[in-house]
Image (cartoon, rainbow, N blue to C red; front, side, top):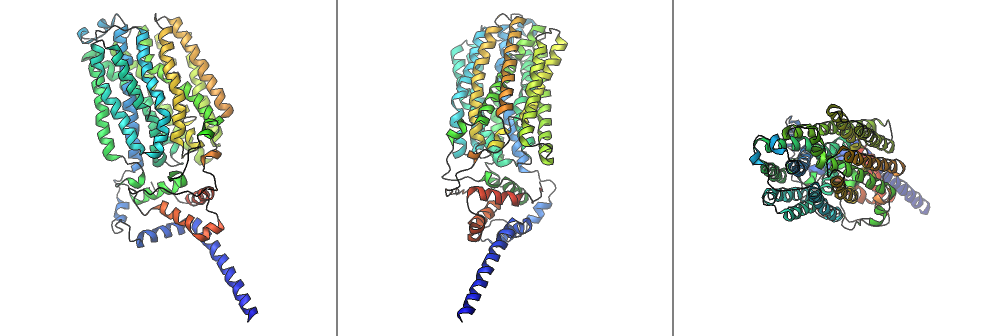
Length: 559
């Protein structure tokens, strides 16, 4: 009897081990995951999904993936708020150029204030001084508050304040104008961290290159809209309408954005089941939020790859703000009308948008086909963007012919768009979960350059001589090349060690009352909570990530 009991006990143990292995194998098999999920949806009494209508919804050909709708509206907001930043730059021409009355249809529509390049520089710097202060707090706020609400409110506040600027400028309340610009900067300091926070939930690793590039391209496309519209309104209607139209467009956008865009896919009532499942499964653990997770500030601030991104952001902001605020003044040397100046100022940015979109598709194609590893790809695109721009700016110091100036200014500004899918998306490579935190740090570094460059440009171009512009281009080239060298040395496309919480802590997932359940995250929770999986695979954060990754790699994309 003892021998028989021993044999039975061994058989039972072997059967348990076999069952454990089978559970783990089945959990990793996409067909079983789909079956498990379908059963879970079917029999869960808490489910609010009508399964009789789901097949019809899946067959609907008019369905537009919600991640594309969200990306479009987020990019549109970026476009409008950056177009609003061109208002001061073009209005400054009418205040600095004594021949402006001859360059517009009605001279009586011009402002009567008196400004110098120094006062314009201080007005620009006031904005970016406020821009610095809210970046780091914004990184923390994106972890605890809904990013879509932060993003919408920061654009709304800046747009409403923009409506006040015509009054303060026309009544020569210069310091009040500076104060308004400072508060606008405080508001827009939340822009990039919250934008990256939105895209964390609404993009997948396979599509991140083109989706993020498309959204960020909104900032680069802004001058295409902002400069021509501002030039047209100033030339034919009145300079103050430049501010009214820009600010009003931001308010209208906010109302639309508020009603359509949700914080996460699980909060969107219009998203269908397939897209929801695809997003949550593809993102894996990076889409989950936890109660007791702590931001590793020390590791982030001392990380060489993050420091390299800070250097790139300094170069980016130096060039971008220089062009955004001073390009019309630079082209004014070539005797264009205000309307012509606005149109010509937009041409370089058209090429930058095209290069940015092209870079996004190239990045996704190369990564999808595994032609290059992520590190080499990011460095290659950054080198093409930064290096090409430096060469073109160097040529600008040797030519004064309007045609050649436009050609090389267009190429220089345009090639920079390739670097968007290089260093700028690299935040997600280092730590998807902390992308908003990373961009708050790197953007704060870049904001320092944004404060300095208007002042430097104002001093060097005080008399609007070409020698001053050439010196400014030399300084710009040295900054861009220095950032490129730092990124080539310290940059990486590998996920960082501090991107994951320590494996020995128990993570408590946030209870989200707005989430639509059940869906794949619920499946992931059940898999990781199953005792057999705990014993066979492990229940640490890292092992959970590997489990979800192996599962999602075999699930085809439907949307």
